[in-house]
Length: 259
Image: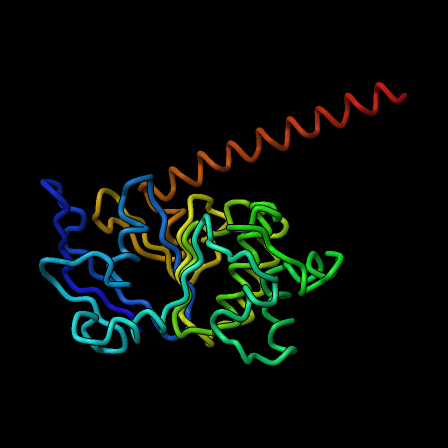
């Protein structure tokens, strides 16, 4: 269980958070969404004790995070970043960073849940294939999925995805989110995203705006009430409709040319 109570944090002259109170727990999935600079990633940095907070409370399993061992705290939280760090070693070695002695069955399961297993099998040397410095031999989506598999294999009590599905296509994203849904109860998951598709199936969604929590609820509730979440649904819905229309027009044009 993660909880924040009246969290207030100053960064320079500007308040980074103002009285943010929320609870994340019980093995559920939570979405954090909002405009750039609203405090989504900063909230995770506070949780990892990278940023200090001036007042309020942040607790993990009832313990104030400033009063526990920093190394223990960070071992409880698996974070997958938008641009993850990978070592210039084999795929297997990158996966094993968090659990060097993980059994093969769990390695495969983690890779399947992260939708990277079939890609690894297609590499010439499979799990022994070398990853270039910072993962340059992999696509952006493959790097993100490999980092996600590494975090799932570590199996921490708290999993944080910080815009870490941004480079995967929507079909792959759907497969990953379905896999995370099947893991419900095994860990508390926080999904930070710009795309609604990444968070709309979460049990609860927090909407941040300039360091303030302005909405909290599930997708159905928030999409029906007046506020920024509903406006985002309308904007992204209109964008999706426009993209589908353009694709349909392009396919029709291609068919006409072939005819």
